[in-house]
Image (cartoon, rainbow, N blue to C red; front, side, top):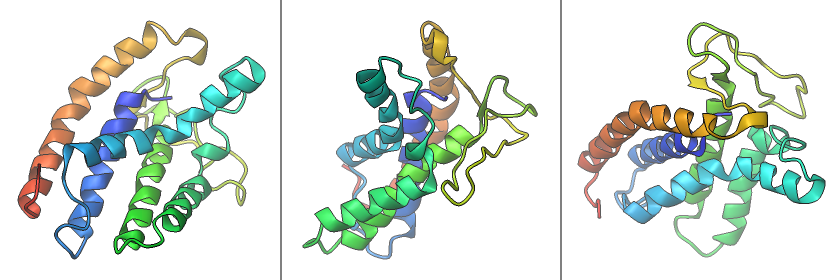
Length: 183
């Protein structure tokens, strides 16, 4: 698994991509609060570890299951659609939510033990249609061993930040120039 840093920064990137595709300037405002929300939404699938810990006493039991699928991303978007029933931004918010949740699946698909042309841990993004894990031959994100979360996660998070934060900052900057309204 990549850390919350990679998921959050990629989630912000996906938010900016969705913002750039919007026809109306203020449909998805480029506010610090919205970027924080995007980072949080991108990490929601990993809440399965907390649920696993509370229900089974082991954070690994449910991790990487249903919450790490494109179906989960679609269901998340539908939930936003239902909650925002009176909003003029309902469609955009629900699609953006699905997009950001799917970013988590994408990051995990490219997460493995060794960065480079090495097989990843794989993911089952097409569950329940395809139940088997699909493995990428290219690892972009170093996974953290679940049996030894610390200090490995801190080192991995540091390197994710070093490499991804400048790219995300550039994308936020370009997105702010694309449509005015950054606050």
